[in-house]
Length: 244
Ligand SMILES: Nc1ncnc2c1ncn2[C@@H]1O[C@H](COP(=O)(O)OP(=O)(O)OP(=O)(O)O)[C@@H](O)[C@H]1O
Ligand SMILES: [Mg+2]
Image (tube, rainbow, N blue to C red; front, side):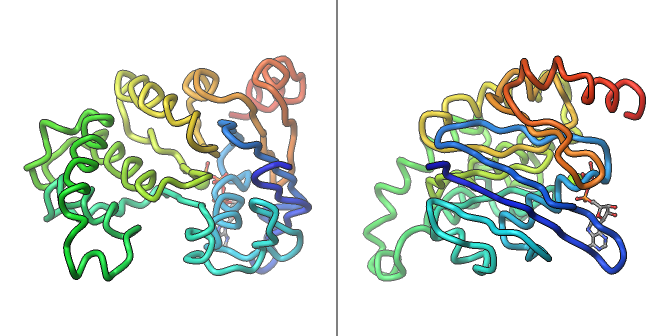
């Protein structure tokens, strides 16, 4: 059984059809790239999966459960986590405290009140910051780290609840080539622990980390399959060579 199964997703905004019957299937431990020209519906599909938008038609099943109309917080409890284009780090707090907050959010309130979690959490904060090459910036306000480092902090925070599926919408936007490469290296170890759906315009980046690609074009799936299959698709080549 796939982890995520979105079937026949339609989403209209007034008279505009952003998604016109899209299917998306993601297996456990699969890294799935979502690509396509601007306005093709990538973010809208991600929002439908995350619960920020409810599809006009279609169904979304996650871990065997119909979540089509389930509120975002309940999806999060079921194992969905996301990082969107908009930043969610608290700039005045240190990198350490941002990470601590993200890890605390998964602990029951009673643990926090009796603050027995602070010790083990301290180790986890340091370990996670180290994994994302942020350990030496732990004491700095998040506002002072680079744009790329802020993106890594957000990804680390999104992974804090140990989700079964992570959704990333253009996490490398505004990054240098070197930062993008490093982002791929930071994500790959998580293939053992969760699935990923990632929207990206950088095709080299997506080829390097994804197993499967889905290409959207004007609200429809143009192609879906292995990276090699999609790369050799004439339909995809036509869209990318003539229109992007
Ligand atoms: N809340 C909204 N209200 C009205 N129209 C919207 C809304 N959200 C998206 N759209 C429209 O739906 C279409 C798909 O948008 P979407 O943001 O999903 O595209 P995208 O593939 O993520 O594009 P990009 O690569 O530029 O991020 C676009 O025409 C967009 O203008
Ligand atoms: Mg988008």
